[in-house]
Each structure stands twice: as C-alpha cells, then as structure tokens.
Amino acid sequence: MSSSPAGSVFGSHRRRARQTSGCKEVASLKTKRGTRLTKRQIDALASEADRGYNLSKAARETVRPGRPSLESGISPRISYRVAENLYARAKAKSKAEGRTVSEIAREALERYVGE
Image (cartoon, rainbow, N blue to C red; front, top):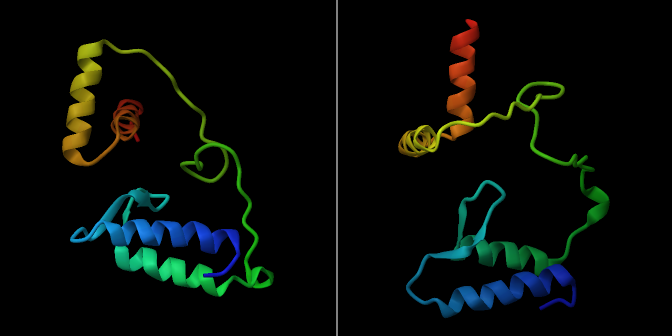
C-alpha cells in the first residue's frame, strides 16, 4: 500500500469491507448522491488510489457554497410555515413518490401561478 493519504484512507475501508463477509454493501460508504458502494467498487477505488493520481491532468472544479441552482443563475429561496399535520402528510406522500417536499411545493407553486 502506498504512503499517500488517499491510499491509506481507502485501504482502511477496504480492510473493513473484507471483515463484513457475506455482505455486498458497506452502508457507511456512499457516493455524493447517496448511492451505496459495493465491495467491488470500494476495492477498485482503493486500487486506483494505491497507484496514485496525476493531478496535473485533473480538471479544475469551481465549488460554490450551498446547493446548485435549479436553473441558470440564482434560485431564490422561499421559506414558510405550515401546520404539523400538513407537513407530515406532504412528507409521507413525497417519500411514497420518491420525491422531496420541496419538489412538491415547487410543483404546487407552478400550478398556482399558471406555469
């Protein structure tokens, strides 16, 4: 294993993944989007890190604070309060549909103002 910080970090996760025999996923390791990484994916990432990275070929990425805009430019934030019962129903329905409460609220506002 290399002495690079990335190699040692992935290496320790790789050892932990091997200790969980019979399990294909390690719940504590996920992508930015929340997808769980399988043992095979973790091992591949660890091997890549062990080989090292040529950062001179890496593309620069501008990281801005906060969530990405919904459209080009800035997405203004709307914040409001609702009754606890309404929020609970919206949360349950959004979960059942695989959506967020924010998506449902945006859709309702679009319908209200007449798309």
